[in-house]
Length: 244
Image (cartoon, rainbow, N blue to C red; front, side, top):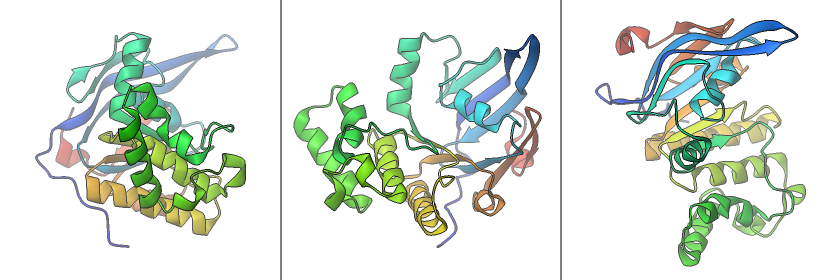
């Protein structure tokens, strides 16, 4: 596959973390899962976050996804400070701005593939006819039209992850986050899923951030962040970005 599209050098940051930390208390001890992160990710970038187990990379991704809150520091998303928003306000921002692909798919078992994809549109109050059109387009784009009426238990792992990607992208968010998206897939299905994610990044200029243990997968991104003990220990584009 052709290498992913490089983000324009002059693009403004979509994600900006300013001295962000996340602390947890476990058994009376304080664990610093993310420690003083300063990070700017521009629109259209394709980044990987890599590090050993327990390094804080998934916590960092959850903070970026607004699924968790920083203990300290500020987070600017699309130029707006989202640090102190209420839970309802964060949910609204997430629904229109962020798509998230999980390792374990997180599909609703009782719903069909089409219904799972449709969920964000329903939550956003999109009209029925437009929902049907957009879901049909998403199913077709990801080769799932013949699986539209199948429930997750009737789908392969690769098909479930494609449904999850379609659901993540149905609101056309500018930011797509993926936490170990190939972790539960065989090599062939994993390669197909990564090809789809990279196609979305390339064709729609989506900002794509992937957490992975797989060095070969991480190397496909055009920017690589290394996390060690909660700190951003390496950043292949640090010199180009400057200090956030």
